[in-house]
Image 1 (spheres, rainbow, N blue to C red):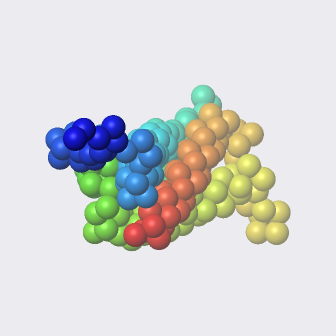
Image 2 (image 1 turned 30 degrees about the vertical axis):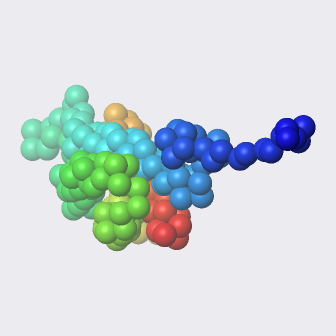
Length: 200
């Protein structure tokens, strides 16, 4: 006796078919990894910018030298960065910062390749904070001397020299501006590292 009722048989999908299906929405871990990788790339680009700014500051200050066209029998009027210990400290500090930033590039690349690695990010956070402190100190000290060079100080009979040594003052002022650009970039790097560490 034949029955008109048809029995429905459920055939489960094979494991090969199930494995072939890719999720359309990224998992939270993948999204987190992409975010950290983006932070690492931005960190690397900021370091390149900071290297350029620090080298520009050191080179500009280190080449600031001007000699006036007139002189006497006993005196020759000259202004150079090595006449002032503050400017010498500035050149040394900015050169050290530029060297550190170059050496930090491989660690920044590690944070791109391995976004979840904590040790390189923590090391960069600590060293960037030290570099920020040194750069701020050098830039602030040099800025004080540049201010006196432009305006002088009547109370202590310090005369402004920028009317006579215009090229010298222009170079040292540009070097100070470049140093504060480096300060801003280093602050951004410290904040980036802090955000990346907080996400762990």
